[in-house]
Length: 273
Image (cartoon, rainbow, N blue to C red):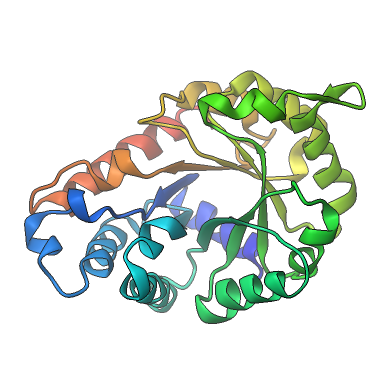
């Protein structure tokens, strides 16, 4: 199933724009989980089971798994297998910020989509369209391109003027006008920059979805995000929350606590739809 169709189905079925980030940190896991043989996987499975009816997607940050070596990568793969087999209508996003040239891209594509069986991946545009083209050719997959990121230092390069406009606006225009022939491109727009989000929405119109990090721990406002980034139909957003949900408790009630926080966020988002 195409990523866009899978996402639209999850949004409609769960009445949700929430994406839960499955970014487990061994130091923060409940003791009962951390002592197990596959702590990242077991933690993820519990979070997924507790939130699967509340989300439109899951996002997995590759660094959290790579930090644990080959065993971490295996748990990343097994998390993908678990979600795909038990909740096949919920898309999985790999947050890895890929894009390179030549055979390196072939390796990234094989690893992300063949080995891990992800539905979408985050990409960076710095190397230009040449580096992105092998990904852009994958019509079934979601390609989520960094545009205006949520970090404090985002403007160091993204605010530089290129052909009379800031670089982040140039990236949005390039993705919308040149790279989105298969209608499978999305943009990463941080919740911490709602004014820029509004400008980008005006540039790309209603035909592109934004992956929005930065709500919760980073201080982004749901109200501001919805006002600035939602399409005329009240969607067009994948609003991600990771730490604020998955680490809501470090006790044995962690899954229940995660569900409660996810439900609060879904309700808050839906107030503005």
